[in-house]
Image (tube, rainbow, N blue to C red):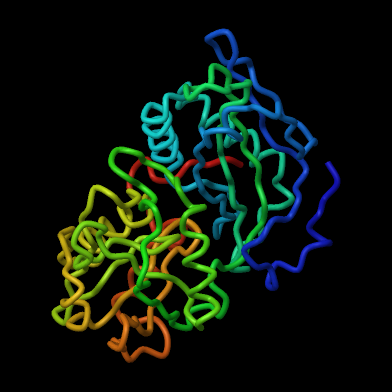
Length: 341
């Protein structure tokens, strides 16, 4: 493999696609998965009536590989991504890709693209996108019978530009069609329905949308691309509880870190929007965002300002501890780190 390190300015990477050398492909046909292969071909050829094109029968995951302080290349909790995709596939009547093979495929893709894993301390990482879609021709409204599972990798920088500079949110005066994790769907779905709101938010000077529950429009749920955490004035870490938001692996990990590493109280509960002004810190969390501080939230004529020029005290401790675990500076809980190389 030809090294691509010399061709990449790691410090200037944004959150965008950079072609890497290999990706993984496996097909489900006649009731079984084939052995799967690594390929250099980044194109996907589909029938014009493929289930994914006609009825959007598809799902995806997002995860990252890192280079640690001691030079190892690792992934963070890939077993949870495998489980979440399996849950999603069951809900969408898709063939479940075996979880052991999911982790094996992740390992193969990372090893095949080691030259694209950014160096330790660069602030960049290798983003992995496992995804699956219905591939055979479907014209009646029914599930596909054939599926393709793929993983590609791309080196990325921060999801939000500006490093730790607080971002701004607005509560839109219209809803997307459905939250990312509607009901028992456990992965990033219905993003297309949130594209118009996010473009509208950007056009009006905001980084993201804060969505409230669709039934009463009074309780905080999540943003278009990340979960939300708050910090109370007495340093309790609080996150919204709802069946309709995506069950974030990063959020789950941060709540554990708050309790078991920082000795803080952590609580998942319903959060009325009227309570937001009482919190002293707010941040977005997710695989892509990691932990990004929020400086203000605007809802119509109401503006809530958290008064931070950078990360708040507790948010910074959460960020430093979680990234310290991911990068090998802090001992990880058992099973959190998958060593690739």
